[in-house]
Image (cartoon, rainbow, N blue to C red; front, side):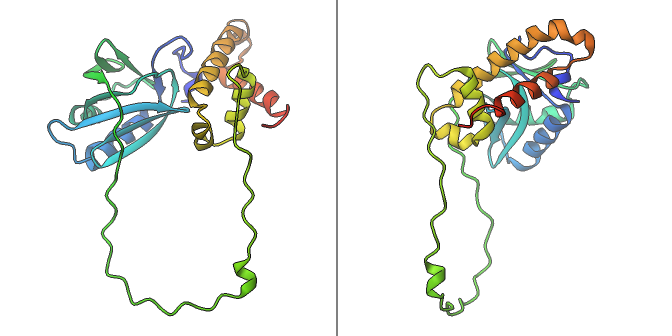
Length: 227
């Protein structure tokens, strides 16, 4: 099921809507690969349309919609075991309320946390074979032209939501993060969703869906001036 077509109103909740199958796969991966024990914590945070979860030796990413302003931590063992008893609803609503993390009707004790750096151990390497003598490189190959780089993003504090949304369509999450725009783009996206919800109050009678209006808005943005 498309998240934007769900029975939940994702524009009016402080939480995330997640496809049940994708969340089940992510929790199963954590349970099998994280190596979590006893007091190991799982950290959950949200960036540009994706819920990111890291615990022990594992890190997973799941597409999500909604608002998740603060990273939280929860027992990794208990959270991963939710894969064995996920509610049957689709999509599922993930919320953090008053010290508890909820997956629909399931709940876990949780708290706001800073996300520690993640270092995944690399694979064990077999002994390397003796290196062959390097082949002589023709001079013309050494003088390859440098790759063309796009201009760095820079927006004034009063930049409109329109320009921020256009930047999100044309630039990568890494470029947005380097420009310090991640939070502003998230707020602009939430404002767009609130406006779309108001429009749906009048248009849903004709079969218009949230995803239809998102596509319309993005098309009009792309028809304008590029960033």
